[in-house]
Length: 277
Ligand code: ADP
Image 1: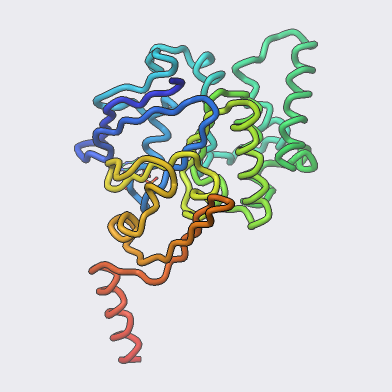
Image 2: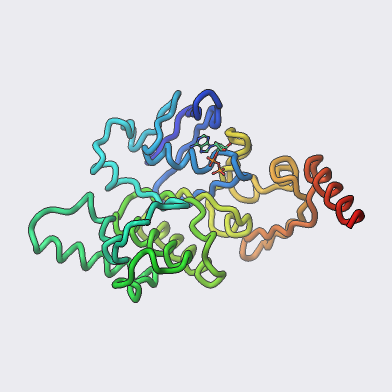
């Protein structure tokens, strides 16, 4: 087993935001991490990447605690595509992607050439090479998201963590990036853990889904086992129609309406306000 998250608990000050999180991720596995806003997805990704330390429990990489690996060693194993990155400095896009090579950089110029070649390769695959000379501050949100994915891929990790990688992308790039990630999983044996809002994208691309709610795992398994009407009702407060296509083995989720007390209350506040004009 490549990655093991073992009974992790995490607190922001006194507030517990992750509780008893345990799961394993193997080589060539695409794991979709889903859950409502504030359920703990970003925090969990940061713990796996070693940015945050669990209060209780551990994360293991090939049976070794990640806290025992030195930063360069860890960066060759694990890369993260954050939801927001502090890119306020005025760097060229090429240099931002080159940052992904930091765990490999040495002083010899020949090696620098190899690194530049690798950066160009990953930029080509993420369709960002044409942005190479532009400033990172002056490109669109979707372009920046692709650049961050290129930077993480340039790191050539065995485990790639992504936090909502498609949220700023138009539908064409959403599919293109997801297809690229899936191909890397299938052909290179990359392990991916990807927090994702879009339930249909999660269903389509994930081998395994982890459904998290209130900091606890509510379901774990194949998309069809986890994305059930009951779970969507309990966790996302939606009534949904589910269609499963036997031939393509794909699940489509069509949200029909929202349910739940709080949403009802908000709706009634709105309609009263509209009545009053
Ligand atoms: P998700 O990614 O599922 O939206 P997060 O992991 O971002 O959830 O947040 C989990 C919980 O932790 C939320 O209640 C959020 O408000 C809280 N939280 C996130 N970051 C911080 C922080 N830096 N300090 C305090 N609370 C935080």
